Image: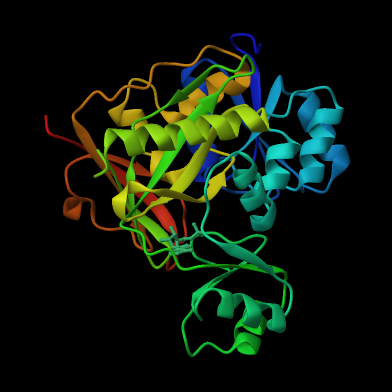
Length: 352
Ligand code: AMP
């Protein structure tokens, strides 16, 4: 267990690291951010910043030895970096196993299926011919996704009846991909789940997530789903973290089909944008419970403190403060505004 006043290392320097570092500070812990960039949202607010590359074993080991536990805020931290940290004897939470599964969409789908969590029909695609044959299996439509490094709709192509397999495969760089059947879902939801080293788990109310252009725009609670669907989704997420022997917070995303059936889309081995409403709307938020979990502390209670909540992302612009609706504002401290870049979010409690 990390002692009071101890040190948490965080691999990655973005807004998730910044909010984790804030949560650590609130619990009396020091956060050290390890990332290659000199000036990042998390590096500017954490207790310390350790500049280093994720493939620099010497720097990573020295950093890990300065920490009581190391966690991450970016799911593409190389598996080898997680192994280097663990080799120093400092616990790496979550560990290399969860990263290895989550970083490859084919591994991820297989793991979900092995946990009895249904996913959309999918095929591995390593060539234009393989894509052609997978497309004909799925009635000529589907979503082509790179196996690695896709996020916020990047590394993805929607293919319709007139799609040319050769063009599509080369448009994604000719790299290993999967083709997913198009899921005609009614809505999207996610489960945010936390698990401690002792196997204690906690989930939050299930948010409904609204995407535009592959990017999350809004999460709201309650989701328009039945209690049974919510319970099935939560049970699946708990099964996933238990099977992975996972420590920390994880987010599992689902498509809700007509009639309430659930198909898992993907999971993120970290705190998640669709849980950004939890600090303001729940007794304990995802960032605090992630820190508690990786520190080996008991989890805080997760019930809502309001009947409902809406979280809107601020994307690709910094609106005038006067134009924002009333609500709890979080800005990530990014100096450069870019199209599609997440700049902050605003949380409004509803039904009070
Ligand atoms: P992903 O990066 O896999 O989370 O995909 C981003 C978004 O694209 C999802 O949240 C969905 O809105 C949409 N999407 C992804 N895969 C599918 C699919 N198989 N069928 C329909 N929509 C999808």
